[in-house]
Length: 235
Ligand code: URA
Image 1: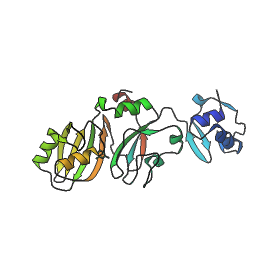
Image 2 (image 1 turned 30 degrees about the horizontal axis):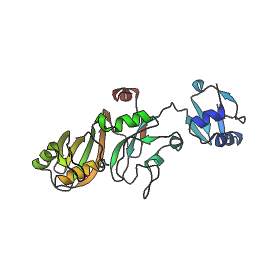
Image 3 (image 1 turned 180 degrees about the vertical axis):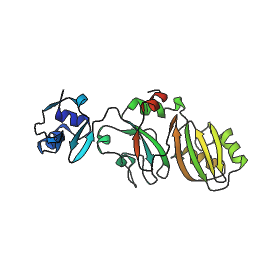
Image 4 (image 1 turned 60 degrees about the horizontal axis):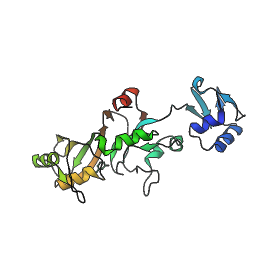
C-alpha cells in the first residue's frame, strides 16, 4: 500500500506538494470517485488507472522504455534553443521521471529515437565500446556512384579525427538514396561521412538501432518497447 500523493509523485505529477494540492483540489479520481485525502492508502498493483485533472492515466511501470518517431524540426534536447523539444511529444510526466534520449538526432533528421528513464540502458546503447549498429536512409544531392559506396565502406577521415570512420553496410535503394549502417555515434557523422566522400546529405531518416526497427509508426507518435525488443537489446 502507498499513500496516494506518493504514488502520484512517482508517476511524474510533480513535487509531493504539487501532488497533495492536486488531490485536495478534487482532481484525482479512483474508480470515478474523487479522493480528497492525500494520505489515502492505495494498492498500485490492484489499480490499472487513475484519473488526474480529467485525463485517464494508466499507471506506469518504471523504468520507461519507448521509441519515438522523431519528426523534422525538433531538437533532441531538454533545453532546445530554436525549435520545440522532442520531449514535448511525450506526456509531460515523463520529463519529471527523468527520461533521456539514446543519443541525439539532428534537428532535421527524422525517424527512430529510443528514450528511457533507465540510465544504464541509455549509457549502454550510446557507449562507443558497444558499437550498436544504427541504420539510416540517406537521401543524396548527387546520384549514387560505385565510388561513393566504396569510399564509405573503405572509410573516410573526418576533420579533427585521426581515425577513419567506416560504414558497416551500404545498400543502394535508388539513384539518390542509400541505406547506410554505422556503429559509432559521432557528431553529424552520416552528413560528414557523405561530405567527405564528395556528396551531400539532403535528407536523413533513422530506420533502426540494434535490433529495434521503426516500422510503420507514424511521425510524431511513440510506443513502448516490447519485452522481446528489450531482451534482444540485452535488457
Ligand atoms: N548522423 C548525422 O549526420 N545526423 C544525425 O542526426 C544522425 C547521424
